[in-house]
Image (cartoon, rainbow, N blue to C red; front, side):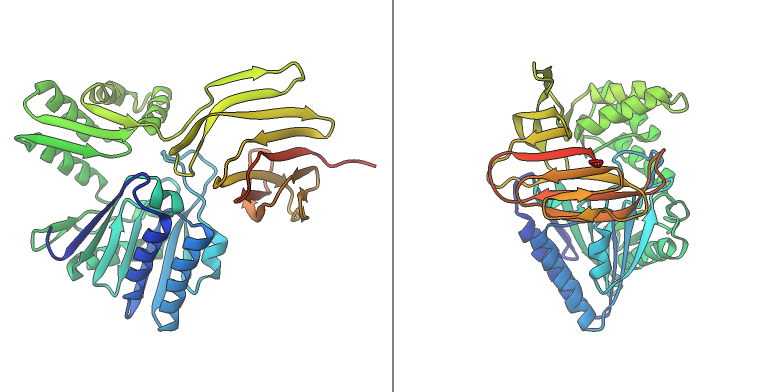
Length: 403
């Protein structure tokens, strides 16, 4: 690899989040003038948030100009994967100029940091503990003023317009014909055609690693090359996301024409990693409780443990949910409360206008307003995080008692 490009790969279970957090902090610590951050998903644990947050605060203390863009949720369906929920409250505590970008109709899917308009930290990695420990990702640090300039231009377009659809109009540029930067959606069609062309020109082999392959030019070319059998082709995808895309395409006649191409490619030498577990079986007990046998997953979708039984039991006060837990497990549960008033928070319960959620054991509580549904224009989310202890977690949900 060229001396101006540093490459690091992350594997499922191959490193700990703290290790990657220190690497991110080291890059931030190297800033002398500016740091522009565009991050699709920023949701760190307590320890990693402290490491990265302290690095950002040190940069601010040195007088570094800091700007931070992040994707936010939107109610309408958007392309998979679904938009994450950045820790807006954490970002608000950092000494940065923040800007939320709505993922409508396109996601703000960037994952890069521009340092001093000279070096770019980029790749496929989100800033989450799961992304840093349970996913396959690549990090690229590019020391090039010309490449950094291209990223500067794209960052500026998004910062100014706040509209993903109006960005990516940066001419692809080389750095001494070693590395070339492309941006989308402005050059999305050009990039798809370029990738398809390179696949078609291959003489010996093609290797592809991507969660999804959905563009017509790439699918068509791959299907043809696989059918020809003259080139060694292999790849890996996210099997769960591919299944979701197939379901979406079947329901949309405008793009269903791509289904045969996708199915032909997936039937070839491609493997798929399952990223979302599901319930294997369900039964109703004599007492009316429902038992679901399934498994635990990380926030990123990686299966942690299977063969787990979850119990949903009716009670006089509503429903009681029981989730088995082992030492080291971190369990998160979200409840939503309608209305503009903030729910009342107590040690082991949260009470809204209509409902109450209570639990056993110690739990961190994070309240965040700004949500909505088809029937409730104002919702507050209460996210419970159970970080320590053994034995089952029990949560009860029911209406507020009357009288």
